[in-house]
Each structure stands twice: as C-alpha cells, then as structure tokens.
Image 1: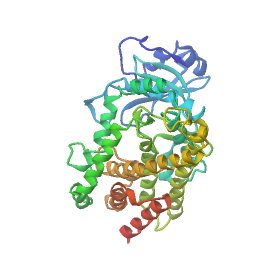
Image 2 (image 1 turned 90 degrees about the vertical axis):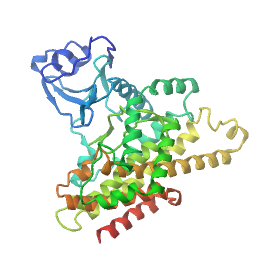
Image 3 (image 1 turned 135 degrees about the horizontal axis):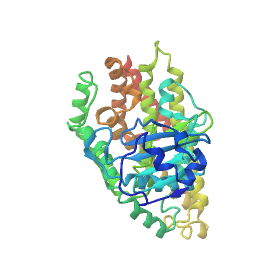
Image 4 (image 1 turned 120 degrees about the horizontal axis):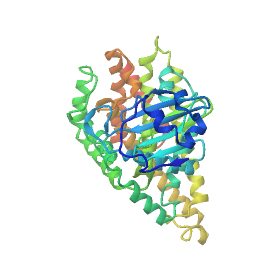
Length: 429
C-alpha cells in the first residue's frame, strides 16, 4: 500500500481519459496493472449515491479507483459534500482489515488525500450482495461471515478492547466526519417522519400509510430517541452504512466495502442496519417472483440468514469478551481476577441485551427511510409495477414500526422473524 497525501496538487475530478495518466507513475499501481497506461482499459462503473468508481485493467491485472466528489452525486452540485470523506474511508478500511482480518475488506494499494482517491483491490468475480438477493440466489457463507465481521470490528474498536489513549485518539480523528453523520442523522432519523423536500415514496399507493406513520406520535418519539442514541453513544468505530449494497460476494468469499460514513457510535447501529436489509429483502421477494409462492424458499432462507448473523455475532462477541476484554470497561480486576467469572458473564449478558434492544430500533427506522426517504433500496425500486411494489413496501413499513416502538417486548430473533411472517401474511391476504 502506498500513500500520497497532499502530493498530487489541486483536486480535479477524474474521468476515463485522465485517470490513467494520474496513476501510471505510481509503483504500487504499475506493479499490478502494468507500467504503460496506453495499454490500460478504464471503465467508469459507479452506481452509488456519492462517488466516482473506475475499473482499471491492464496486461498485468486490475484495480479499482474510487474518487469522492465535492457534492452528493445522487443530487448534484446543489448538495455540496467535503472530499475528506475519502480520508475516513481509507482509515476505516485499514482498521477493519486489522480487526476483522485480511480478506474481509478490499486491500488498499494507494491513497491520495488531495485527490480524494483510493485505489484498491479489484474484487472479481464478486458482485454486490443485494443484486444476488434480488435474483433469488442463496449464498451459504454470508450469515457467518457478516456476523463475524460485525462482532470483531465492533468489539475491537471499543473501550472493551482498545487501549484507552489509542481509542480516544481514534474518536477525535473520526469525529470530524461531521457532514456524513449529518446525512445519517437527517435522512435516517428525521426526514422520513415529515414532508422533507427530498423524500419520495410510491404514490398514491402508499399515501395512506405514510400519513399514518407521520402522525404516529409513539413512532416519532422513538425515532428521535434512536437519533439521540446514535449521536451521543460513541461506543465503537462503525462502518456507518452497512447494508447489502455495501457487501460484495462470491459463493466462497465475502468483502465489506464503502465505509465512508465511519464514525464512533453505538455498537447496535451497524448490526441493526444490516439485519434490516435482510428483513426488507424478505418483504420484497414476492415482487420479484414470476408465479405465486415461487420465492417462499428464498424468504425462509433470508430469515435464516438474519438468525445466523445474530447468533454468530453473539457467540463471537462473547468469545472476544472472555479473551480480549483488555480495555477500561468491565475490568478483569473487578471480576475474573477476584474469582468472579459469573459476574463477568452477568455483565456480558446485560451488554448483549442492550445491543439487541437498540439494534431492533435502528432496524425499524432503516426500513422506513429506505421506503419513505431519499435513498431507496433496489430490493423494492427494481419492482417496476407500482402496485406490486407498494404491496411489498407496505408490510415492511408496518414491520419497521413494530421494531421501533415495541422493541422492548421482542426478546429473540425467532420472535422477530415470526413477526415478519405474520405481518407478511396479514398484508398479503
């Protein structure tokens, strides 16, 4: 990996014609692609909301180049956004690889801070996980891989594990990711619950339930309590935008990408957002089937993946608690060193219980913002017929409301999955 912070002059947005010349004299790139950019093929493939993404192919191999733009690509120059988000993405990827292991995120070959440019491993034949779920493809390793990634990055980035000075320095570093936190704080927790300018939904099919949710005082209070939690509980370094569009997969490999929203927040946030996307995929499946009942096996599998993610997270978090709890929280000097291992287990159970309750709330508001806010999921958006799409979105909205408001009465993943089944049946009948 090479770094060239500040070495490339004034920022300029790259394109397929200029990227090669920018990269060809960088040794780490030439080693992987080839030294002569005239023999490279450059394609712009970005389909996200924020950035430019290029695939660079040459005689020796391929890399991916990702460049931030000084605005939100989805909206345009009317919504400016600082280039420093690539700085946070770079530092998050470095930490995630260290905490979750080599091969869990793309390897970084080069970072240029001035150009907001990260050049990283080209993942092939990987595809975006969300696309596979829309296609009805089951991936055998995904639940375990994502459960381990969450447990390891979230535990090892917290005061449960990190040296306190190192962690506080990290908190200060990522605290400057203000603008991307502001996007989350507004788009996830606030905008869906009133008539925000950038909101959109399937209309008129969902107009009734949208009005109902925006008049739901209990729901709005819970959404704001969750926003309070998100803003105030700096427990660990989060990915910050962990969903099925931030994961690339093959049958045997899972990589987590795009952590530009990284910051220190509640452990439950990443897990809740991730699980919400599997539950939304569950509700979306009938919209993609060609005959009634065709996707029932896929729906059952998706609920099973949600169960496996949570079970794996719990087991690995508990393992790390027992073997790597060397930070300032729940000190061993208070428990194990005094022969009180049962006290340590009681504390672990309390921590896990709080994570569980909080993640359900975060999952609930994620279901809402992906249907009512600015940035929607392809799970629903790729259903062309608006009546059919609304028939999938409506139960997902009901489910999200129950998670947010009634999360304290849902005590297991089995109960939540059964709630999803019941709501799906009621609103499909």
